[in-house]
Length: 107
Image (cartoon, rainbow, N blue to C red; front, side, top):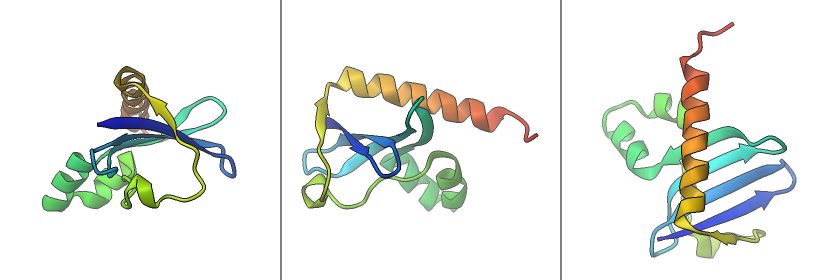
């Protein structure tokens, strides 16, 4: 597995990806900059499970989804390679933010 970070300047979003050996996204985190608010923290395994159980809309509304094409087909990105530890830190923080946000009653 490999881990990368890409920054989309137009929207000021940092993307963090965990990739399989073929370059397909397994897990994806999207953080709004500045401040690093988690917009998405999706897992392909969880997405497939939600799809199988007719819970896909609910899953995507909370966690988002992962990019479909492999990294070799992406254009206009400048990936920065990360360690597994760096990715796991971002992943766990993003998931915690999303869980906390969805536990709070609407105002």
